[in-house]
Length: 193
Length: 155
Image (cartoon, rainbow over all chains, first blue to last red; front, side, top):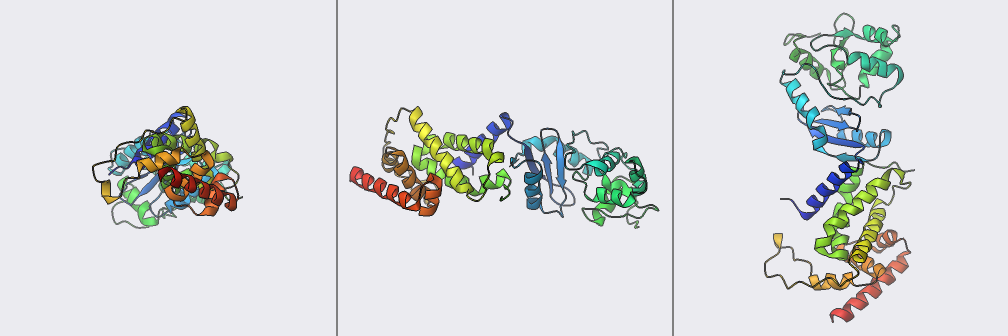
């Protein structure tokens, strides 16, 4: 049951959004792997938290690095949530969401932008990503850029593998990476690296 | 400097206290609007806030100002006293006594805030002092004066 305080909070948030005070809006979303956390700025999706990541810590980090005006506002993430649902159902092979890249910079951001262009159902090696970002020898740095990807799933770092096809690492855990690649038809079920 | 927590945390932790003091200060009908004004003002100023250690005091100070604005806008007319409600309160929680809160609303601002913070929000003296920006001793005095006046008025 909604209390008068709930109504007042709702009214406050609607007015905050109208006034342009929602620097970071966030919401939870369901996924086959567990709950996700989605966060957007006025520019676009800025952060996706995977099920094994601490949502509270992630919000504190956003408050620190983007703006302390962080509020739960599910409506602002309706489109992202809808596209992710379709993606998990195998019905969407390209996200059409504006992105805010401000949580990465320099070489890391160049790696992530290169990853963002890997098509659905394909994979690339860390070496190729390093080369695309302008430094072929910085393979390890490219790996760590993938590991620090603030917008996983939508920026598909799960499509980056080790040379030779080994899975490498994944912020959401290797079983999740494997399942995503199976979903995209890259790996057969039960195949392992 | 203590880093500022996400504003949602501030809202989660203090909305009940803010609503409590506002119900005491402006009555049930004005409280929702004052609540929105309070948190909007807080959210606007939030990134520039330099000290995150007493967020509750900061919010209650803003709420107090919004309550005063509310009374000013109404020309400080006394709050009309409703009839005694004949229906039972939701969840068995007694409805706040309208006559009492109307009398609280008519107190001078500092006394009004002290009483509302103490009995509407259940704050200890030191937090009332922080919210009002005065010493705990002064907060205690405002509370005492406010209560004395209420006793006299309500007999």
